[in-house]
Length: 378
Image 1 (cartoon, rainbow, N blue to C red):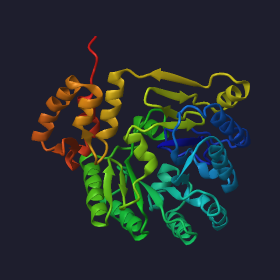
Image 2 (cartoon, helix red, strand yellow; image 1 turned 60 degrees about the vertical axis):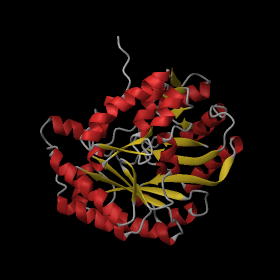
Image 3 (tube, rainbow, N blue to C red; image 1 turned 180 degrees about the vertical axis):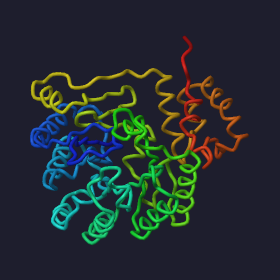
């Protein structure tokens, strides 16, 4: 099974923390829609002879497109691929786009999963992040979506935000659980290069949250999610039973995926490809039949490092027998050696010959994963 990802590179407003490729000008929306369809046709053979079990509309803000436009992209996918009968089709959306009219039309499409960018229910946090909805609008949008039959809903929450007290964080999560949704994606605020937050941080206009306070918020999230029946199946993702994201899991389980749109990434187990992150240049290249992407051939060690990065993020963990089978005895012994100190420090555990991060290890996962990487000696 494989997946198709559409990167919709438009937003009506620029969030101050966001580093994803996007434009706040919507002038090229129609041209972009045409070119997304053209790219899909051009790259229909990329995944080989495989069926799809996920289609994902991310961004940016995919809900800038009307439901009939989203459905037209699904129609194009159906032209070129076999779609699994139980395929997961996800639309990322901003709460203020989910009006009664929009949801009524969306309920008639094949979209069967919503990922709603709430981030916080506190208006002062939303203003700081330059979100374009209020906390009440976010809560009401989820309730409205449920009333139109959407019963597979994920919400985003950000912790570690300057000024987000533990009390406010608890209130955010209480409202999330009150909504009785199926999935939570929760991320620590990152200060990525060239974002407004990073520029403010460098100028002293923002103060980064203390690491211990961030750790406390993360641990509270883990504990409360478990109490409410959520499975912590990936570092930043929590799901009710039966609602683990098929699309995200395809990344972590080393499945093939095709990325369509400017800045979108693709992976077919042998190569990584990424499209140009410029709307104008992407549209021009697609229409003129010129190159719009770059690619990288993966060595065995590249593939091993990818495997480490993706498998250790999940509650399935890194399968040591799979390492031995796919990458050989040397890399298997490398993993055994690396795991010893983290087993002793209680950052990881070993179950059924898989190395799995403990809660303590999840918070410093980047350091642990980097340590497991195989680095070529010069």
